[in-house]
Length: 173
Image 1: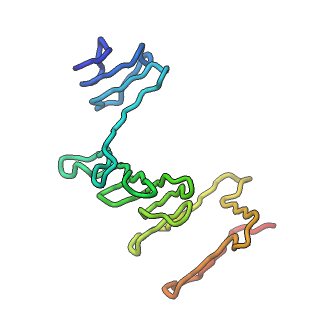
Image 2: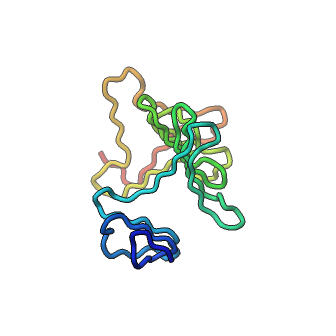
Image 3: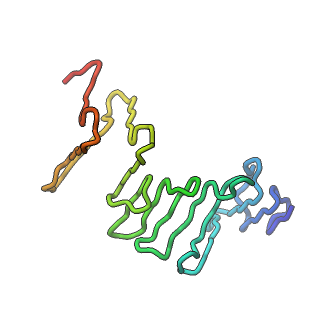
């Protein structure tokens, strides 16, 4: 065990800044502990050149696939993007642009503030809202100062069921 500014390291490498955070118990299996004293917090910086293919990243996996889960920062694009991948596929992308702060789930290039895209073989609902709070709305749309539709539903020729289906076991006003 190696301790940097830590006399009794709790993991293979334990780095402590200042007086430390107090009594800590790292998660079982932790190999690296970075402990701050609260004055400046604690962090890890990964810095790379701003060039194609030089993206900073963090991977998680196993011996069969070391990069099964990956988070990386694509800083050579505009807008810059923070990718979250599973099995080499983007599952969520956040963009960093003052005019285009966007989140893409299932797409690397969201065209709306929030875009959720599911492939043709998804096999599950794309979005589900399940609200068990009896006095709160499950979905609330408020459109202010707009000349566009507040809610636009489009169903293409592939739709084999209803474009809109509303059911209730106790519809009340």
